[in-house]
Length: 277
Ligand SMILES: NC(=O)c1ccc[n+]([C@@H]2O[C@H](COP(=O)([O-])OP(=O)(O)OC[C@H]3O[C@@H](n4cnc5c(N)ncnc54)[C@H](OP(=O)(O)O)[C@@H]3O)[C@@H](O)[C@H]2O)c1
Image 1 (cartoon, rainbow, N blue to C red):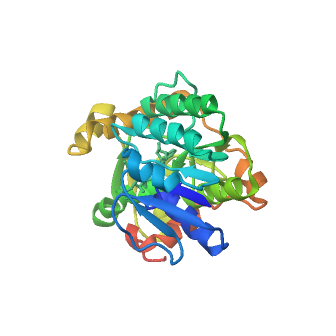
Image 2: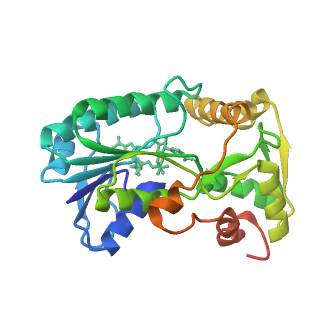
């Protein structure tokens, strides 16, 4: 039995569906009852609540931990690690993030601390450290469709991006083939935001990326939680100070190339207001 925590999220949902499609006995811990693939066991409860967490971990061989960002993420993930060790879980695959332990990105430092807790637990483990998901671009889709522009602070800096479905496929490979270790996951190319605007323009939606200051972006994101705005700014600053280069880890682990951004933009052409989707 494999337990997915975060099975309604971007990565966890894809992992659930793929495990189910492969006939792997799968369980999900969900905060509210969901319409999951038939046959996937559903335990309703918060991962911060020991009762449902212990019920979800009972009889589980492996866990995929894809916890959403939030103010209590570290405490919740650490609690999952403690309870997983207590329940005798054999393998834990954790969705983590790139960057060193002293990264200027607070959420990257948080992931390192949880990774340390996993190591200390003695559970066999896999740490997946993907760069930014293609799917994050959908955050800008409504504005691009309506106005044809979006802001960023990174100017022409090439950024590693990866399709969350590839991250999910690597997670499934790790869970089912018991692949351990730490894996830095990228897509096939590093690409700047202005280049993404050029690609959307070629797809049929004239788009411009406006380079803004950190304070302008903070104002633009007014209304979003402070930790999220800080995270976006830290990530974008990190990218301009630490050059990002694609690697072949996804291709190596999956024996196929990683998905390409152009295909992702094409699939979501309607959302971006592009005519040639
Ligand atoms: N997005 C990126 O570009 C990126 C890149 C690298 C690493 N990451 C890391 O990836 C992780 C997020 O993965 P994601 O984007 O696939 O997830 P996501 O779409 O943000 O979804 C988060 C999931 O966590 C669940 N969750 C949150 N709090 C919970 C709780 N207390 N108890 C039970 N479930 C809870 C959510 O359930 P509900 O449906 O109930 O909300 C949802 O299923 C983060 O740790 C982030 O640092 C993201």
